Image 1 (cartoon, rainbow, N blue to C red):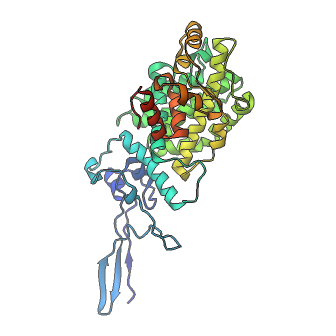
Image 2: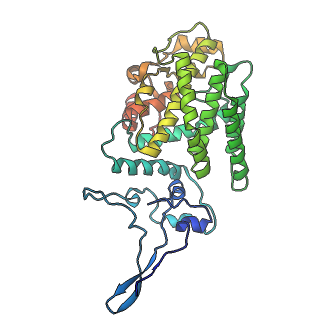
Image 3: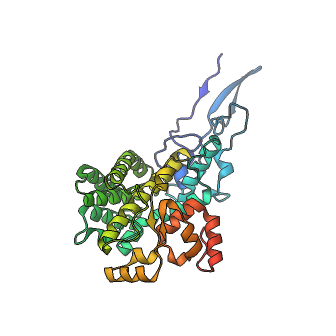
Length: 388
């Protein structure tokens, strides 16, 4: 009599089942377990294996058999061998409750996928970043919505660019960021719905003038950062659907302003004109960095290296942070601009101290030089804390 295969009716992995959450059943690790750094395992299927003396029912564990071997016979590294999680991640869980997300857990979402892709496609070399750079870049990008709320500006959004009135699109993004900072288990469903609605409204509204274009792109960047780097599956899926819009709006701004056609002006007729020109360059840079980090998360590499390298900006913290035209003029007279033409950091590394360089300067310095080289520079100057 032919043996019967008894397949488990479970529609999710064990951690998703315990948390009573939807599971996409991805192999070898489902998306939710990747995002939350959980030990993704599936219940083993029970198979009836025939023997010479009859039918003997044995329980065979297929939870790892679905991981494919390389066709050339090389062993493939599974996610467990790349894990930076605690030895017993189940200690983070309470049955039926969501685990608390930490920065390290969110970092590991991207780093683990990056490693998996890199090991499975070792020939890729375009736009591949080491783990330390990715970790630092993601941490800096994730801080931008919070800085916008707490300081009214960040490394690519300057309130002076929109005087006397900040456009509605950017106001909505600021409100969404403020709401996101108050996220908890009770309000998160409503919060995500509001953010999703604001994103749809932003795309429906579009833009017309250059100022409106800039503000709309900045608003979309803030919403993308919130949803991409949070770790929740649905918001990230929404963000992925709008990735093409982010790319199109960014390319259009580059074409419209030709921001990549020259190294930028070292001087300007006024503070207002300099802020607007600098804001455009910084917005394009941050947009490309968000796209690059998302591409690395999905593919293990990105193809935006040339697009970023075509751009230039002023790395001086004092000049960017100047609160008025008088402060700006004073900063110009008293300190170097530390201009970075086409991502050439020669002047910064030779003359600047870490305290002279703003957040964007540090972000791009790490992107191009790496954490180790930047820490060497910090130690050489004897100024500032080491980064990680």
